[in-house]
Length: 522
Ligand code: ADP
Ligand code: MG
Image (tube, rainbow, N blue to C red):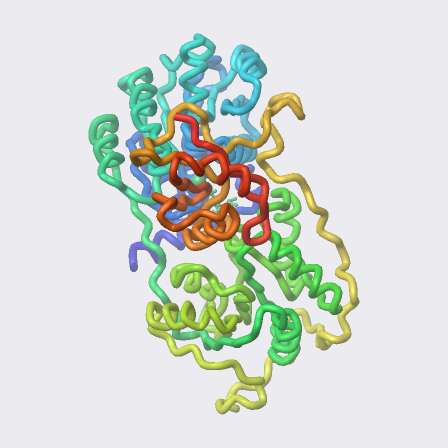
C-alpha cells in the first residue's frame, strides 16, 4: 500500500515524457498518472517489456500509448508499432485515445478492423502509418494481402489479452508476434492472467517486468453508509426527497446503464433539479465539459454510470447515491470511494428495491460495513455534525430554488462504434464487435451465439438466462452455457433452437438497451 501511495504522488512531469506529449496530456486534462501509468510508463520508456495486469478503466491505454508515441520516429515511414485489440469497438477507442495523445506529434495512427471495407484501410496504410491499431483477424488479412508488413514493428502491444484468448485469437496473435522483429519491445495488458496468457508471455516476451495493480484497500471508515428500501416505481420521488433532505454540497448519483442515466437525468430535470449526466453515449468532448462543470462546482448533481465515472477524480463530493445498487461489492467500494476524501466525512446512500435486499446483504458482508436504514438528517442520533447548508461556492440556494432547466443541455451524440475511424462515413457494415474469423468451439450438438453486450453494460448471466427463457422460450436444458465477458457474451444453445433464439432475441431490448444476437461463425 505504501508503494501505491507513493506512486499516487507522482506527476506526469516525473515520468520522462517529451514536452509534446506532456502538452497533450495537459490539454486533455489528466492531472496525475494513474497507478498503472506511474509504474508502466518509466519501464516502457526504458525499453523493458511490460506485463500490466489491471482492471478496465485504470488507464492502460495511456500507460502503453504514451511511451509508444515517444518511441516512434516521425521521419520513418514504416509501421513501427502495432496494437492488437480483441474487438472493433476497442480498436476504435484505442485509436481515438492515441490520436489525442499524439495531438502535437507528426504521427499517423491507422485503425484496421473487420466489418468495414478493407480497401479504404489498405489505402490508409499505403499513405503511411507509424502505428497500426488492429483487430486480430483484420490484421492477419492485411498481412496476407501484403498491405501490411511488420518487419519494422519494434513496439508491439497486446491490449486486453485475456479477451483475445476468450475469443480464440491467441494462436493468431502468436503468428503475428512471430512476424515482428525479434528485437522488439512487447507490452501485454490484461485484466486477468489465465495460464495461456502466462505461457504466451513466457514464449514471446523478453524478461518482462510485471506490474499488477490491485484495487485500492477499502477506506470506508470515513463514509457513513445508509440504504433506502423503495419499490422501483417510487425511486425517483424518493430520490428527490433524499436529495432535498441531505442537501449535498455535491453528489454523484450512480446508475447502472446509460439509458437509466439519461432517463434519471430527464426525470430530475423535470422535477426542477440542476443536474448533469455523464455516460458512455456522450462524446469525449461533452464528457470533459460535464466533468469540468462538476469539478468547478458549477453543477451539484451528477448522474453517472460506472464506466463514465472512471477517471473522474473530484474532491469534496459529499454524497454518493447509488440510485441503482452496484452489481458487485467491488463496484460499491469504487463508487463510494468518491466521497469522504481528504479526511472529510462523506455519505453513501444506496437505493434498493425489495428484491435487491439480498444483494445489499452481500455487500454488507463483503465490505464489513454497517449500512443502516436511511433517516432524515434531523432524525439522526448523532446531532454533533452541523447540517451541511453552506456550499463551497457560497451559494446557499436551497434545491427548490434551482431553475427548472439546467443551463446547458447536454447534447446526445452518436455512439463511438458507429463512427468508423478514418474510413468514409456510412460505409461500415452494421456494428460487429468482434472479428469474424475464429470463435471458440461450442459443446457437442450446441451452437454458439454471440451477444454484442457484456458485463460493462450491466448485463449479467442471470439476465441472459432470463432472456433465453422468457424471450426465446427455451427450456433450461436447451441452454448449454452462458458466458458474460466484459464487452460481449456467448451463449450456447441446442442446435435445433439456435435460429429460433436469434430470431426471437436479436434486436430486442434487455435491461433498457438493444441486444444483437447472432450465430458465432467459426
Ligand atoms: P483501461 O484501458 O484500463 O480500461 P482506459 O485507458 O480506457 O482504461 O482509460 C479509462 C478512462 O480513464 C478514459 O476515459 C481515460 O481518458 C481516463 N484516464 C486515463 N488516464 C487518466 C489519468 N491519468 N487521469 C484521468 N483520467 C484518465
Ligand atoms: Mg483498455
